[in-house]
Length: 330
Image (cartoon, rainbow, N blue to C red; front, side, top):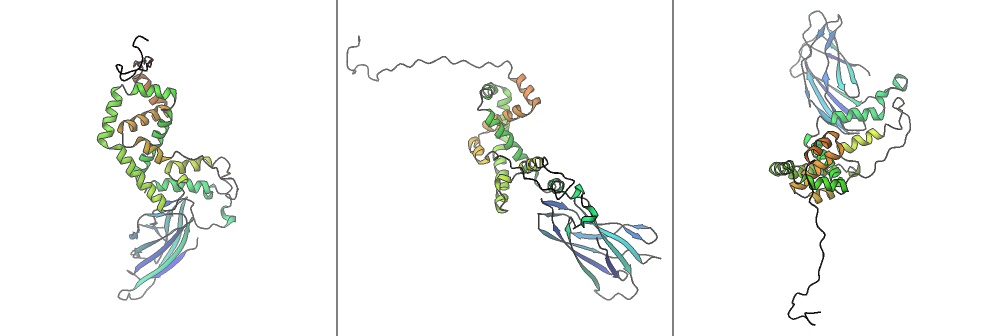
């Protein structure tokens, strides 16, 4: 990356207006910083500066404007400083700055303004880094996914996890084993306490609200609902590692297509706001996917017996015996 040269007078205000465009195939969070100043004799000076905004969330193809303001540090015998703007992404990208102090009288309101436009990640010539796995699509997606966790409200992820587990439990409850466990579980103190706590904490209402906000933002951004969701995005990323050589960014492969995910609306409609159904499906889902919960719940319901219903023999009787036709001796 080319060096930006700045010539200013002592105590002159410097304003760097930086426009950053994201080429990363997923949302990323960046935190621009001004690195240490280094003098020509190797001395290091801590920079004093302001940057606004301090954090930026960038969608693929979007841009953000960042402003740095600072004054040159006081130097005794040196008049040249070497620094850089540091923008972390797949790696720390440094945009070099060479600052030179020139003699002269500083006029009132004399400010040095400079504009810089760049991209994340910067365009790197092929001969420099043609086979770097850092520039592969899936590597950048992974790093961007980690960065996005900095800004995504945790309740969205928790609500999505609860719905995923409840969906698993709902399917499991339709099996013969699931029906037996459900009946036994309903007779335990665990089930009663859990249902009461879910009702008191209003878990169904809380998850419904978080889900509606998340789906609203998905619709607003015109994102395909079948590809939405934090967990679903990580699944797509994982499965796409199967047919890609990440050391070759130009490697062509077919995108892995996942089967349709569970219809969240149908699941929410089935559970409604019934805390007993929410707790039951959550426990059954955990029982089905977690060996530890599986063993623990087996101990809880081990000695619980299921009542065997006697077969009912249906007898057709007339409603009005006195007024029926025919002899009562028939």
